[in-house]
Image (cartoon, rainbow, N blue to C red; front, side, top):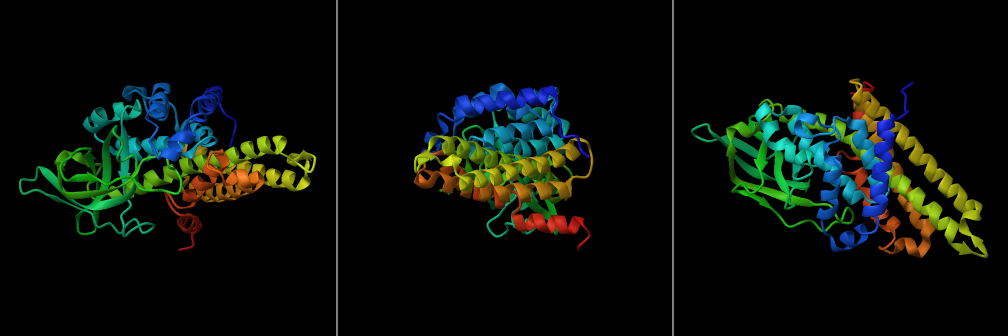
Amino acid sequence: MTDFGLSEEHRELRETVRRFALDKVAPVIGEYYERHEFPYELIQQMGAMGLFGLPFPAEFGGMDGDYLALCIALEELARVDSSVAITLEAAISLGAMPIHRFGTAEQKAKWLPPLVHGEALAGFGLTEATSGSDAGDIRTTATLSDDGQEWIINGGKTFITNSGTRITSLVTVTALTGPDETSSIIVPSGTPGFKVAPGYSKVGWCASDTHELTFDNCRVPVGNLLGERGRGFAQFLSILDEGRVAIAALATGLAQGCVDESVRYAQQREAFGAPIGSYQAIQFMIAEMDTRAHTARLAWRDAAARLVGGQEFKRQAAIAKLHASTIAVDNARDATQIHGGYGFMNETPVARMWRDAKILEIGEGTSEIQKMVIARELGLR
């Protein structure tokens, strides 16, 4: 059996992030959400706390922590708000981690320190308009210039998180660099030919940053190749495996937040002369919500423990992501029902949670993709 006990450092981190979420995020995030505004001030505070450096080495300004520490922070943030949580998740798992995993010494020295300190953000450009779940169907191209000194990139990416903020420093994109050859290339923000479209009007995650990107004869140095040429897609898939553990932790946080808000409301709201929490129908609904959140936490912690321990975790990551995202949607629906009409009002946290939950069954691999991964890992090919 995997030991799910947390170290003293992990418990202290959980409490610190929990207090930050309650004291700093909760009072203001609703206004950011309604304005569809990126919360720069909160991100700056998270950077000062060291959250963006949790799984990175001290040599780059990191906290010498691990992926479990990141997931603990994500769960606690998402108990209050998912926009802030996904900003941290994407900044680390999708933005900085590819450079840490596959970058040269020069690339790490140049790009990682500001990302690790939360002074800059990076995007992960994989998804395209014609290829969602079929992520291997890449149309963006990168060809070498005549003198062999530059990559010339043409194409586009969709739904890219953290790609258009005023502190975004780069986007790593997958592109065809030859027949059946996909590579990863670092594209700095502001590069001529690299255009960021206006932000999407989204159902949820309204205080996070998401854009469509286009590349029109965008030139970057040949040294911006990230990792081995032709290994870009494989690199990104490995990054997604890790990211699914993080998304599972985030989804668990949302599910637990629904429990927190429902218990609080059920104790305060009276109907027919008694708090609604005294009625068995509400008690059973909340009990089921809590059970879902608990089992989702066990699933992501198992996957995280395997990841940190150097064990195979691909199937466990898919299981955790599938289960946690499903129960997040279930808990958000039930929390809204418990809150009645107030649950349909955007000023209540559960309304935001309801709007935020659905994307968890889509982003970083749909539920259907997770089932395919699980089945293949069981030998069903």
